[in-house]
Image 1 (cartoon, chains in turn brown, green):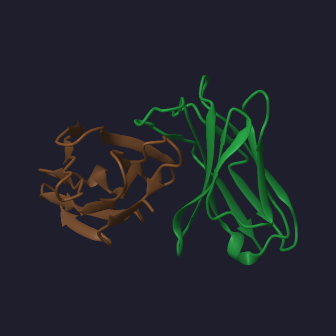
Image 2 (image 1 turned 90 degrees about the vertical axis):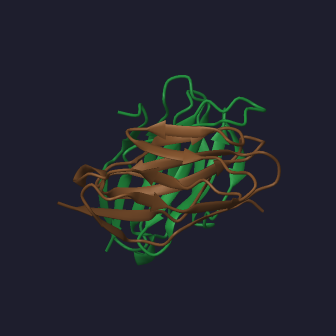
Image 3 (image 1 turned 30 degrees about the vertical axis):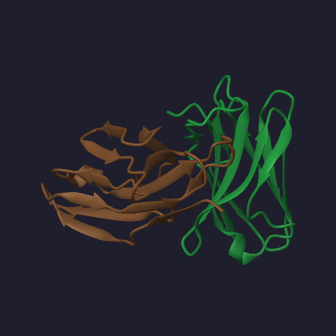
Length: 112
Length: 116
């Protein structure tokens, strides 16, 4: 079945450091891929998405490229801020549009 | 504000009791999802309803049940509660028309359930 695997956290970085959170997936067909973010005390919210191979999703300085050849959708940001401290979830939506599947989440701590 | 409303925000109850969590989806969204988030299990998909019908079922216990009403709001019923049921329960919604691959899900802020 479909699955999403994320790098385990927590990830601790200093402000202005480069961020990469790895995400790989297993899916039949051509899923859409998402990154969601959960700030402390809040629900998940969509950060960015990509719907086909080689698409790049971007938002708030974060980017991720849909790589079909490596079945990956790694999240990157060039310079993190303390306010980026949150839990990040990689997810995929299968071709039927049913039941978006989430990874386990990666907690990011950014120190000033 | 995602547009998904959940009540109550916090709930404390005793083992063996039953509770009902309520969710109002975003206006126009036909699909409602329920997720459980706990420290040890992460984010677990429980169940999805689409326009009143159950569409997909995940790791939902038999003690739990859900339904989606004609006005599209949904309720998650948790019965015979155990300490391990303490978690944050999220409702989410999406438009999710048939055949659409890109399906963005919008989450509510969650209902914190503490079983004592």
